[in-house]
Length: 146
Image (cartoon, rainbow, N blue to C red; front, top):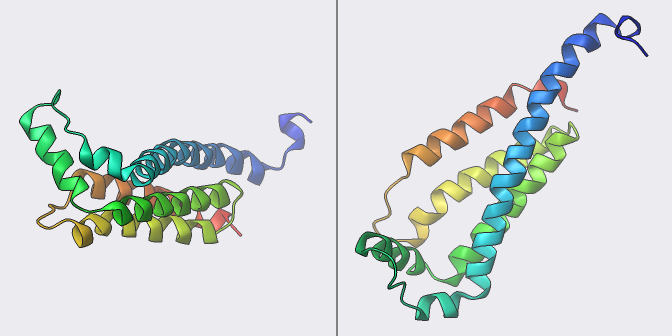
């Protein structure tokens, strides 16, 4: 099938869908790493909490102590939220609108969960901005989804 055989509407539709696919692939990478890292820490929380990261600087050690103060459930919950984020991206990759809602809700809860589990946790504004950018980018494709 040549380009002349493709209706004009589909010629404009396909390049835009490539951007959606790229967004989904980036989400697969980022959320996949989130599932892996939070899942490993949650599964082996006792090992992580009993080991002192002496090779790191004082600031990094303090950050690790603060994160570990959240407890095992924090890491397991975040692993599940990243799985929901992956599921949402998978659905959007297949042009299912409900994937957007899975993704958006999971990102919202990923952003607020540290504030619920870690006393004195500061909002990571760069993470908020990045999540908002992805959500708005995905929202631009909602009309193309079922």
